[in-house]
Amino acid sequence: MFNGSTRPKVTRAARPAGAPSPRQRRQESVKTRVYGVLPSQAGGVSIHAPSRRAGVAVAGIPWVELAGVRVGIVLWGGLALVDVGHLAHAPSYAELGAVALLVAASSVGMRTTTALAAALVGWLVVNGFVVHSVGVLGFDGAPDVARLGLLVGLAATASRARR
Image (cartoon, rainbow, N blue to C red):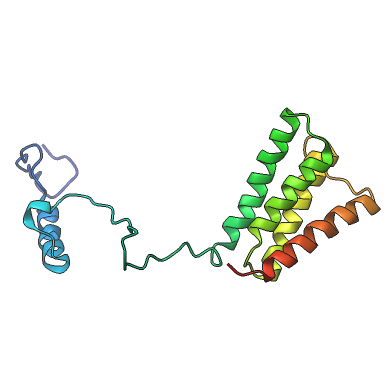
């Protein structure tokens, strides 16, 4: 019977359960040869986490390169702080202070422009969830300028600090 294909159907023998495929066998020989893995360890997965042993230098987290992550921490951490402040019935200046400390801590060692972006994100969180309700943004004149100035000043000062 013609099934629309000119190639005959080829069936392959099933390999036993747990047996590596031919591709996996080729990779294992490369892994053991290149990385010095013992044959008994071939096929296993290991995580090489740095340890703090005497005389061994461990590279720290490159926070300077993770500026976007730190701005995200300002956003999500600020939202969490404001939420906790609302649950604890904290006054608005306490919530502003908590977000300001978060902005300052996140801005340590950042480039100035990124630190100013973190301050702007912090101001948006304060404006939308502390001053106004449910994320509604508004501009109230001098008080908003003062809050923005506080956050920008803290971020700019903290960005000059080095660890």
